[in-house]
Image (tube, rainbow, N blue to C red; front, side, top):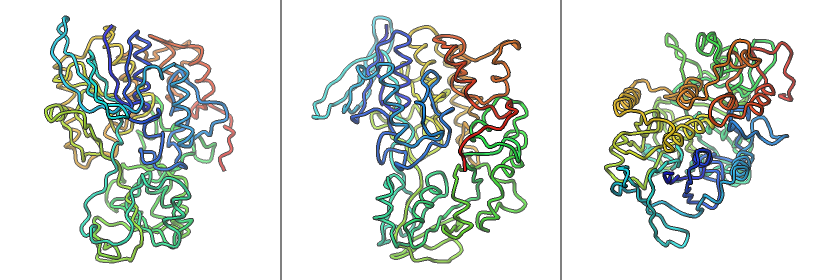
Length: 502
């Protein structure tokens, strides 16, 4: 069977290794750290804080054939996600295939094999720095989307004499107490980490101000499927195959019903008059409440500049601040690819939405035998897994590789999306469509007959990973059916879903 190197042992790399083993392949996983888990495994690696929770419930943030342990919080903490991924690696015996503390330096095209297949040489070094090389038929890049903290070059920032941190530095309550106690704090950015960090910092700081450029929706993790009725995890309400899904057909009205008008909490959060409401959506439980009570202030400003002791906003107003926290996201890095390879994949390191241009986020015809997994904005676990199952099936010869023409058409569509203005928060935000499209390629789309006992759950219930283990290769129908029936289904249930959500 063909050999395959996998770079990274985060969620994408683990799913890729497990899928390769399912197809009878023998993967070798190169992991620079000493543990699995990627961005979830430790401080500064993408999941910004030990107290950070997933934005999706464990019903969705999971692999299709590996349930969460009993007793897990419905929105797990970062540490619980790290434990889940370690448990996944143990359950499927992935550790023997992982080379920990091994950093990949370069990937080179290395001639042709006897079967006229391009080979790839992987140059790497272990913890001692000893260099080595190994040749593979295929390489899967699974290093993730969040590689390097990104801090924009604001005018005057180099002259500012206060503290400047990135969200990745804000790892635990002890850090908040040490850095923010009694300080005037400016949080730059009101997205996922910005809102959460502001709420935590407000417990210690003298004042907290969040600077944002554009209005957005602020949606809690628990929402009403029907106004006035039971609340459910947000993903179980939002993600389904119902053609009348109000998030799609009546998006603004529906978001108003579940999130409210943010302008009622502060004028700077109000939507622009005579303009369509924004597409950007942030999941946060406490932010609007803290804004209403004055614990957190907000300032909408198209630009920011700094002087020695403070910040100047676009309207010319100025505030003294002691600490700046840059909640400005992460940039992607691909340090093991050379200039020609980066050019082939259209790599743009400062593009936090689409750093690469690939067919289905996976392939480029100029790089045969090379695939990416999880390298797109919003890498949900089930999508990573479906990508992995498709790529493994192609490597094993069970599925055909997309044609060069199909790949070029897909890349052209990605390029058009990159040029679109205004740019969407998530270029591929249709999770259900993305997952189902991949499932059809793998042959695991759950097209159940009308009389099947799960037909309604598939058609109207929330789309969750076990849907993709009901049929097709490596199906686990008994496990899948049990997990689907255990998942609350807002559009199907007639009784209140009982949960401790207050």
